[in-house]
Length: 286
Figure (spheres, rainbow, N blue to C red):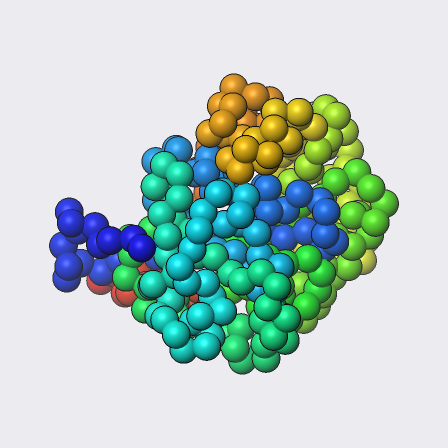
């Protein structure tokens, strides 16, 4: 379990971290691998980062990082532990909140339970700069709620017709039902940078015609044999093979994210770290 930061003034309010939801429409686009490597690249860039696994029934972030959690989110919902007790320290100090695997009841949580989990993060007294949220596949209530509760949504797509179709469906539902109107697109497993850009343009052509959403191109992760080897080793590629093409791409994306504007005050709906956002807004107005 993560211990408190001894250098922090206990009375000082904690800054609101940037919360980034990584999602993908369909399964198999490499969303969890992207979440892990993005979180690791941000941690390596000096950002205190927490990786939250919200694939509630088929979680695998802990497995992919070779971690053995004592508690998971299933224990929080069962009342066996507090959210804080699920936080474990991964490689290079990356913090991880694991979900449960093979617990079917976790996929059947009610919408208010998803909101309850989001709200529980207000009580998490750990200093953070960024939280990366790995969502499950599809357009279930949990995916929509966790994307809505983040400041930024990264949509992972790969060059398969089903990936683009499902990505469009997810964007449509997020926009229509949850008011999410800005989405970053990450092209994954592409043969080269031009293919990544072209994949983004294909998706943007359809969304700009039919939806009131702004898509931005975050970048592309190349197909990379080193990445496959890192997965086999249960490591992030950015750690296992820092000079691999995929690692350099993730590091570049982490640099881009580091330049994004800091989170503003609360937006009036379900949101991670609401109390910290309110405090930050109060300090800005003081």
